[in-house]
Image (cartoon, rainbow, N blue to C red; front, side, top):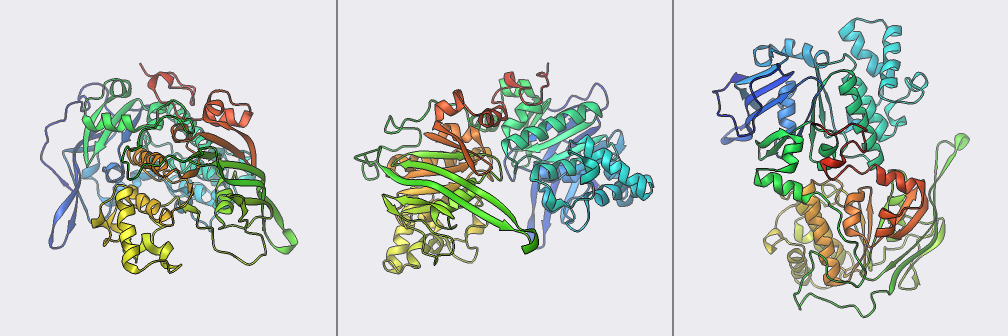
Length: 580
């Protein structure tokens, strides 16, 4: 790594006076060299300070440079990355002057990092106690017994129940939230000065996310630790951040006290980002006035004769999974006697934590999973797929939009063939007719016909999700089942996809089953809500009743875990007071 030339600080850059920060970054540039091509700059002129006991949030969309900046601080960047900076120091130690061996000693001892995907970050063949113990054995020279005792202490510190009993368990025996807690325990094992948390709550349910936020807030106060939080979730920033730095295309476009930035953002991108966060809107009324995203195009608009016509009805749905060996068979009722009714042009949101049975119910509705009991009726016709019965093709009137836009599209197929596939497999129409229809659908979802000949990897996540929606519309369905379609997307892209779904519903009269754990999105999209817990539907009602007058204790718990929308609400989850 080489030192670069001094750069002019951006407006709102960290002040140079005051106590020495734990982390001090000035003029950080990161570029990737490629043979025969110009270098690609992914971070430029980044200035950043993080003080002891302070949580600074680095906010931005995917590709903005957040994670590469954090990895450069840790010294674990890609070998192809070229890092230069005017200053990069940890507690007064010049990181750029250290050898790789010296830098490695700092990792864990004085700075550590919590990665996003807990399952892939933990060794599946080692117990949690062995993985935690290895850290203190290597860095502190403790024996096996003392290292195990320290592992138990760390698990207790991060809130793992009965840590002495769980210390010998393996990663797959813990839930996603517990694995994230274990990663945090590993990161703080040596009580570092700086903790970098890279999207630690992105894949977690709202209640588990709240638990992790409480944990981070508590640990940084108890250990007087500096925390740099990498995130694209504005709700997370609202709840815990003292300072905020906003990144866009590799540059910090704005930073300062979080209250000030939220109250009066100066950069246009910051204003766009904040405006994209889901805010409470008047409840959607079936058959009422048009909602944002609708169209007045007479060629597309449709006024269904009966907005209260039932298009999909599920009664007494049961789905049972049996796991384990024949001698230790375990039965799990993933869906347990669930009823639902969906009307034409309506959006029914199904919400709950991971493991509540939401996605299993969605797959039963579409016909990708069989039902052990109960019936699914589409326009009064029984379309239930039975356990043990011969598999039938899913009904063409019910189509699914999958969660992950990166894995749900065949990377070997061009977009025209991806979208046309539902008609290709049924040999409907000629090849030219199918491709013409694919082009029409691309325009309908906001992509041009020039996308037809490209491959999925040439599109962003949000664009791929639009392609997935176009494919689902290929057979003119009356029902779209959307399984967490925006959970993997940045907040601005989430808003675009939600607007698209609302607009399509108003244009085509399609009914939507929207599976989600993000209640902020649900409030603005759904007409009615079905709340699931451990396979059971505990409450159902219109969106206003569920959000404003919930009856079940679990529904109230879910709502209390939604990250605050304004800084005035800060502390609702963590219990901390708003910063001065």
